[in-house]
Image 1 (cartoon, rainbow, N blue to C red):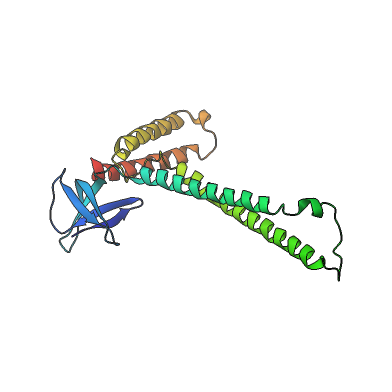
Image 2: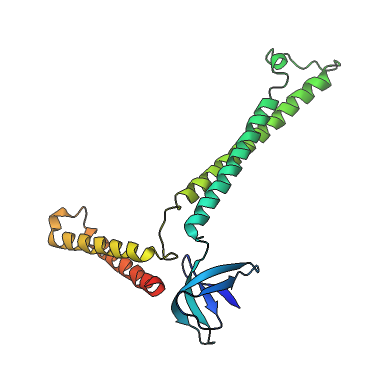
Length: 214
């Protein structure tokens, strides 16, 4: 049985009992028993137990960007539902508004006392519910925005990371060279250090991308 194994941050590979070749379509099973079809790319690791670890992509094209899109849509839908409930509670809280606008004091001992207190209590609970739903709507909108910002993200989990990190390394090398040859153009005393760190970072990412997708 082929299962998923997290090999790098954001990157899950297929742990297989048998060898496969590039282009093979295999079924990988989640820990919950769901089966997904994947295309095999590269052998990235061989375990001491004889298992094989392959970089893979979903046959249906589903990847982390698609996940981000669906999560953004999900949280947006939840936020809209909470906003509708907020409006409903605020609308319900207007019960007896004409009477309450008169600011009549509660007539203690009068037959209207019970109804007056009950009306105020109902509207108070409705306002609380409205505010509660409004806060939840804001929280859902924040999550939707966070996921939406990741819809175009590129990381090691997708083959597009290979040309992406090649370009990022090229840019980092050029920037480092520029700062090294032009000290007067550095924004601050750590500009050259930061540029050098970027070169190291993108070189390492590119090496990993090549191992996964090259």
